[in-house]
Image (cartoon, rainbow over all chains, first blue to last red; front, side):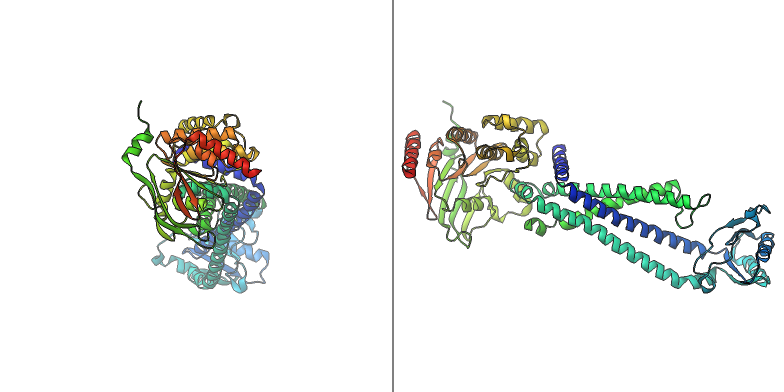
Length: 300
Length: 255
């Protein structure tokens, strides 16, 4: 393919898009929505999966305290556990002394621990992380026994119990997430495909003349690919802008604290935007390719 | 005097286009072509005269390979166009220039874009495309309309654009279906000169027209008639005489 042919196809694409701005705008908005749904379902699915994996990894445990315990008694448990050298990190769902400035416990962190894994689907009161040791050393088991012996503790879930509890929830989440991703991907392919069909219908004459004058397969298809990829690029730009805005909003909602499910570093955000752009272009190309079959061209 | 390409190719007598016992019928072209026997030699210029609905366009479609004959065989340049593989069709069509009866111009595009299209498809360099297109438009007196949109042109000018597009790439074979249908007399002369010049450069030309006057303008041309689905040869006469005779005849018919 020479430069002149490339320019000709590009010019043709620009002219056609200029002549049909309504179709382009409608298709771009629809494709942006599909990309947004696809991106968010993928982000949620991946984040939840990672979250499940982290929660069920060895070296962690969830502690459920008796419901009738007062705030002071709860803090007593935390201050007791804090003294144990085999525990390196403590996270609580209630605001403890470390956050109130009464003590300088570096191990403490306050925030949501886990949803749906504990007794009656409630969050755990305390999440602890053990010092990294060999699993065969028996140190973790001994600590778990010590924890269960504390009078304020109702139940302690180690990694094994958590895996058992989480497995059915994880299957449902996985299935739902994959289903949403599949449906939105299908929709995202359908939009550029319909857009190409519309272009085919409006450029029937151009296509016929090009074929009669000896346009090769690629030459007659090139403007359609350009048009649809333009659609893909526009939609991915809009989608990226929306996602970056929402991630920024999520950061504002949890000031000074990383939101648990949408925790993205700069490099990860760049990777995400590049992924969305490539995904948008690939889906638009695929949708166009599906529409430009021999039969559809012959019908046009 | 140096021999023209027309003379040299004629002496070789290489058949370029051959229709052997071609029959084409159907709902659309009910008994249009009946046992067509046609041989056009390489570098020759042939005018096929026929009234409306005599099967001229059906013959064009057969020669281009857009349709295949019900019976018989159509051979162009040693190949049967209708039986070409899809990837070879494009290569074949790039060697052929066609003036369609309905012009088939891209009305939303400029004259330059329309005329340069075959060169762009052939992936010629940009400068070559520019020069060749301008030259072709200059030959047909359209240089002033180069950037005009085709829908802004008169029917006569659109016809000239169609001729320019069919000839810009110096095709091996030119097929012109009613090339002078909407032309005024001086434009018809210009087109005839253009086609004659192309033929002298070695292009085999077949013109299908109902205009005997235009057919008379083709130098070295052989004239055939397409009547009731059969092709017959018209004996040659003096070119200018035929031109005026045809005109006189048309005027009489009008009265």
